Amino acid sequence: MIRFECDRCKTSLSANDARRFIVRIEAYAAAGPVDLSADALEKDHSESIRRIIEQLNGADPDDVEDQTYRGFRFDLCTECHRAFLAKPLG
Image (cartoon, rainbow, N blue to C red; front, side, top):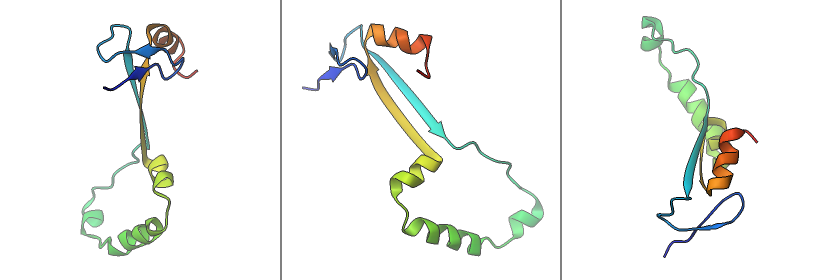
C-alpha cells in the first residue's frame, strides 16, 4: 500500500483523500532564437555536435539536467496547499 503525506508539514494523507493536492513544478531553460535560414540549414554541424558530446561525456547528469530541465511533484494537505497558492515562491 502506498502511503502519502504532505511534503510540507508531513500530515498523513490517503490516495483518494479530498484533502490531498498535487503540485507540479517545471523549471526549464528558455529557448533562444532559432536560425532557420538556408545557410544555417545547409551548414555542417558535425563539429559543434562533437564538441557538445565531448563536454557532456564527463559531466554529472544532475548538473546537466539542472541546466536544461527539472521537474518536481509535491503532495500537499489542504492547509499547505492554501499557503502555497497564497505565496507560490515561498
